[in-house]
Structure formats: structure tokens, C-alpha cells
Length: 234
Ligand SMILES: N[C@@H](CCC(=O)N[C@@H](CS)C(=O)NCC(=O)O)C(=O)O
Image (cartoon, rainbow, N blue to C red; front, side, top):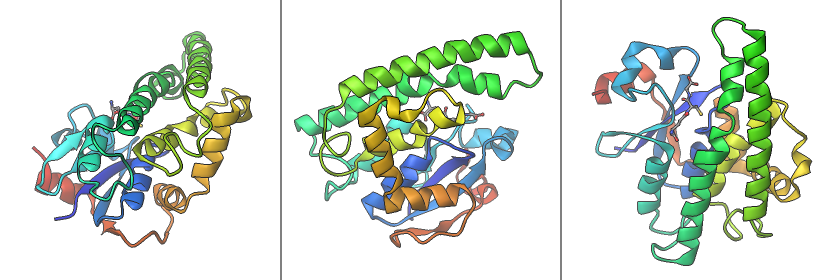
């Protein structure tokens, strides 16, 4: 069977993995999940007990969670090296380094801002403190990522890879939380604009928004979450 990527909306980091699957070009299916609704249902715990996206149902029917594990699974099957690099190459090490930074410190810097936005009961003082803390953290992590990357067209070299996919799913959170104009970091800004104009990212973004879209043809359609849970839930 084709692997099934379970991706979340609105504005999930998992959007970038949909783009990566397009770049990979191998047949896959998708399952679109409302993170504010059905992902919180107890039944979703059968896919991911931490109630998070992304999750991948592998081609042998296992539910695999955590972005880095999913990226590892995809890279291991990327025989033509479309979204990754040869194991043991310096480019492969660099890609994992950047993915790890983006998936940990860079993504985590937004946590306080999401908490402030999604608090069950309004608590203005607490929300204000979370926002101040979050803005500082996000700006600091952007500054560090800007300093880490070179002047290549994409994060590692001249073509988009898994690292770019993981970056592009999260980069737009800067705007959602109105932290800072993105052109404050010129390299990141150029990378983001380049990626956001990419057909695979446009396809992934349209699907996330619930719009009809035409991709490369590798996507063999969507599977309903109820079916995914019934067939592959633990
Ligand atoms: N460590 C996980 C974190 C995944 C994660 O935090 N996903 C977010 C969406 S981007 C989520 O599902 N949050 C739960 C929520 O919104 O309730 C990974 O890297 O895959």
C-alpha cells in the first residue's frame, strides 16, 4: 500500500511534509485532520497518544509519529536522492543538522505564542507574558537560523529537501503571530518566498486550506480519519 501522511490544519507544520512527498514523487495518500476538533477526540490517541500531527501510516501499516522519524523514513526510501542526500555525505549531515534545529528550537520557540492564542479561558496578564516571552524566543531563533544558513538557494544546496519542507511548514507562523516583518532576516525571507512559490508547496497549502488542487500526480487521494483509525489505529 501507499504510505498515508496524516496532516493537520489550520497551519500545521505537517504542510511541509506534504510538499516533501510531492518532491519525492512516489505514490502516497493523505489524511486531513482538524487539529482543533477531531485530533482532540480520544479515538485519535490510537494513532498518536500525544494528539499531534504529523503522523505517517507506513507502507506496511504502522503509525509512525514525530516529524524527524517521518523524515528519516522518507529519506531512507529516497533512492533517487530527490529530497535528501547520500548517507554519510556531508550534505546529509548538514540536512539533518538543519532539520533538527528547525524541528526543535525554531519550532519550539512558538509554543508560548500558541498557548496564548489557544487558552481555554481568557487570562490577559498570563497571555501578555506568554506573548512577550514568545516574541523574544522567536526573534532569537530566527536570528540564529539566519546565521546558520549560507547563500545557497535552499537550506542545503540548489534544490529543496526535507529540511526545506520542515522549515516552510513553520515559517509562516511568524505572520500568524505577528512577531516581526519577515524581511528582517534577508536569507530566510528569500528562502521562504522561493519555497512559497514552489508548485509542491502551493499544492500542499491549497489542500491544507481545503481547496481542490492539482499536484504532480503522486498523491493518490485522501483517506478519511475514521478509516485510518479503524484500519491502522493501535
Ligand atoms: N514533536 C512533534 C510535535 C508535533 C506538533 O507539535 N504538532 C502540532 C501541530 S504543528 C500539534 O499537533 N499540536 C497540537 C495541537 O495543536 O493541539 C513533531 O515534531 O512531530
